[in-house]
Amino acid sequence: MAILEVKNLFKSFGKTQVLTGIDFCVEEGEVLSIIGSSGSGKTTLLRCITQLETPDSGLITVDGEVFFDGSNKKIKAAEKRRRQRMVGLVFQNFNLFPQYTALKNVTLAVEMMAKERPDYKENKKAIQKEIRDNAVSLLERVGLSDKMENYPCQLSGGQQQRVSIARALALNPKILFFDEPTSALDPELTGEILKVIKALANENMTMVIVTHEMNFAREVSDRVIFMDNGVICEQGTPEEVFDNPTQERTKAFLNKFNE
Amino acid sequence: MSFTEQFPIVFQALNTGFLQTVKLFFVTLAGSLPLGLLIYFAARSSFKPLALLFRAIIWVVRGTPLMLQLIVIFYLPGMVFGKAIWGSGEKGRFVAAAIAFIFNYACYFAEIYRGGIQGVPIGQTEAGQVLGMSKKQVFFKVTLLQMIKRIVPPMSNEIITLVKDTSLARIIALQEVIWAGQAFLKGSQGIAGEIWPMFFTGVYYLAASGVLTVALGKLEKKLSYFSI
Ligand SMILES: Nc1ncnc2c1ncn2[C@@H]1O[C@H](COP(=O)(O)OP(=O)(O)OP(=O)(O)O)[C@@H](O)[C@H]1O
Ligand SMILES: [Mg+2]
Image (cartoon, rainbow over all chains, first blue to last red):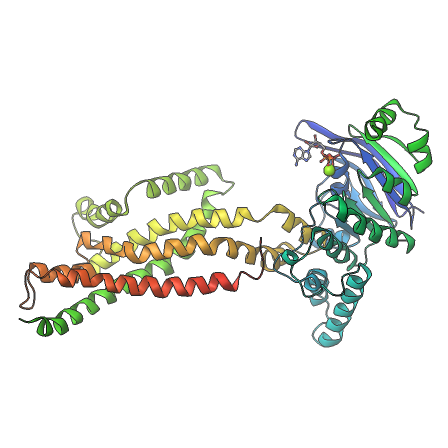
């Protein structure tokens, strides 16, 4: 069964129709890349799935659970939070919390969640240690064990983005979404982020990556979606989409990149 | 009377005046800091008439001199109701001055709050939200400190300006430090035609703004460990 299912998703801002009947699935452990020209709705799609935007209609399920149902949009705040914790989102411009160290950025949300547990007071010490240990090992995984006590302003863009990946992983999400994770970075820094994503792919993390890095998308993805003007125009394996696109619009888009 | 004979008399009188200055300063802060936040919320309320009303109030208060506002608040109720609603004597003058200052500074503070609150990028809230934090948690754990950091420098400027602005209350004869100094020009306690007590009041303002500059600078420094 697919871990993420999006069915007939529509979203508009006022009169602007941005997503027009999006349908796709992601299997567990799969890496899916979404490519497409500027304004085609890629960011909006990620924001709808991660519940930063409310779609107009459609259905989203994550791991078999209803995540968004266009016919039943009113949900309690607590339920929305529970759902949001099931997925992680890595922003283009990191959005790290500037007043906290790298380590605290990773632990903050987990601590907030732990404080709501009924047994928190009794087991405070043990729970805090567990949260910290987990965050430390996540920061090690993204190669930042020597930067844990640094504040975001003391880190390079690449390091900040790696902290934000660790932060998104801290809640153990079922799917991790990336919105152009390298496009705010200097070209020489993109490599370190792509390396981290590849390592996650090797550990079978389910990921959906919006990217303009075509070579990377080809290398890391199991499947690629090409979006154009709010619809999925073409999808398939990287070989199918990049080497033998069937749609004219895909060809035109890829030609622009190969120039 | 020689200077050494004058000095203790003047010093005593200026201290008394300065106490009134300090009182007006703290009462203004205590009132206008919270009132400014309320005015900010009212001015951006989704209930349009309320928002427009408060935006107009902010415009008028910031667009006219504080001295004029002091005069209006002090004299107008008496003209309208035919009696002094602020109470009589020094107490009445203080109440009127405090009301004018609190209202005036609250309108300036409302604008500072606006800059601080709207200056925090929406991405900060969204990052907290996708991590499953509640609205309250996002506010207290993520955005509040960033707002404070944005607010402190402009707030410090206003607060130091307030120390000097308190002297405007002289216009309604509040017995603050300038009034006390001026008394020796006109003649008081056997001293008349002396200008130096007036000059000497400057020392009080310098001392007060010096202390505040250091204290507020410390606060700013305390928040300098991160950048926004
Ligand atoms: N909050 C909003 N209000 C109004 N219009 C919006 C909003 N967010 C996005 N849009 C519009 O929706 C369309 C799709 O935007 P979106 O950001 O999803 O595109 P994108 O594919 O991510 O583009 P890019 O590659 O430039 O990031 C654009 O036309 C954009 O102007
Ligand atoms: Mg985008």
